Length: 200
Ligand SMILES: [Zn+2]
Image 1 (cartoon, rainbow, N blue to C red):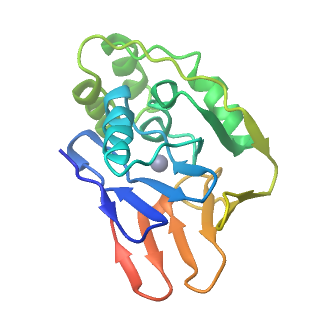
Image 2 (image 1 turned 90 degrees about the vertical axis):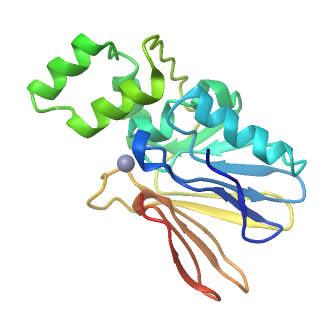
């Protein structure tokens, strides 16, 4: 089981878990609002994150989606809060909503070359046999950039694209320490402390 790590009073993250393709989940804690970063690859992943945050008396108000891949959005329903993403991620999520995640359909998509075998295996492992996935529509959609004032800390979310996924967003906190959250490439880094590699 992954354990929540505290980087500062403002920044927490749950480390990744390679076996079932769980990505990093992060939280930026403001005085008024807490922004979660990514919804996780399942209800149980999202639940684990929320429970561990709760042990620090931290509760998310909204969740930012770094990109559309299954492992970042399948926990969205369990998160049960407003979600923020760019228009490209929104469109891809609308496509995901139409898909079946049963073995047969997954295997067909792997065969057709439109699903990665590792992801299909990870989905089966993470979600077990009963696989009913509901991905709610993201609620706040931006074009290029959005600025979120969380109270005492501002987080900027910006569409940057890149090789991993063309819809990828970069999240960063401008300020003295300049925390950068490069979640699409699975890294959290700070300018002050250097890069903390958190590759999956
Ligand atoms: Zn991805």
